[in-house]
Length: 67
Length: 390
Image 1 (cartoon, one colour):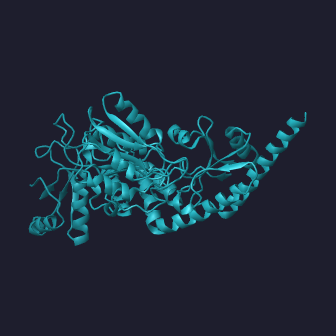
Image 2 (image 1 turned 135 degrees about the vertical axis):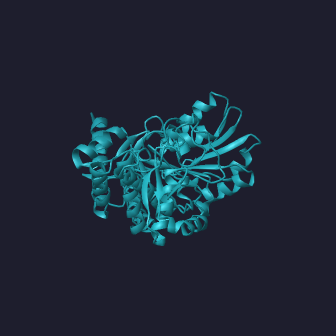
């Protein structure tokens, strides 16, 4: 499962928040069918989706979508 | 070599800056924000961490409001050109560097009104004069935090308060103070802060940034690829991408990040204390030398680490050459890219000799410099006497 953010800045802000919270994540290239951006998205296990959504909310990190 | 030209660019840098630039240039110099491979991701992370460190040093809540530029001039141009349109009015001072003077002069030819608040010959600015000069068209106040010629520190907190009472945003040029005088943008309430990366922040040349407050909107002045919204012809509407067109200087920004980490560990207050001590010693020592004229306020706590002087009857260029050739002392002579400031203090067009000690200078460096100036001045007096007797 991947979380997509509108900027590289927000992607790395999200990665830092996940690492601090101890949630495993990996940066992957944004799939072309999702975004016209050249950058990265954050891949997580579907098991952590609820926790990640909650964490993004508490850190005010908006995301474009989840795939 | 005794390097006393830190107001132009700092030297040396902390060891960690050299190591970081070398490591990043060798191993992580992929294009940040453009690709998804591991090296590009690491380049992205390096940029992100540098932004975070800068935000921490300057009390910025959201580090995406730090926009990287090639230098302070780039940051000032983005703020000035991004803010002002024909018909607008801008207030500045007579102690500004050409990085402010020239963009404003250009805009004044395009219908922007510009008023300059005159400083005293010591470089002191009266904040109340801003209040009297603000009008309904005033869109921006631009001022230096400290003159690069005299070092005189501008009473920015009071001027920002006056500006905000009238709803006018303030752009602060921190070229001479970032990293050597504590600055907290939240406490100060400054709207735009332009900083070089290569002076008091100890980064390499080719680095700088502009802090943009959350409620400030600027037109972009540079257009191109950002790695984001690639299917749109407009620049993205979010920070920092909106203002960062083109490939960033990843090794330079990495070095800047290392410089800022050095400052966070050392403490800007400690750097300030050291530079005040050196500056005070220089001011006292130079003032006691016959034939030497020292400019600006005498209290070193009211100036950045800059001391301007000249020697009666001697071209500042000749003084600089003698310091360099005979004593291995690096100073800067001339107009220091700030003709308005030299006109204000009466040293235009000849200029003066500027000494700018940094954190890595010692009291021994200052003693050796005073000894050198004493000898140069004595030699000048002697030559003058010989000429009169002939």
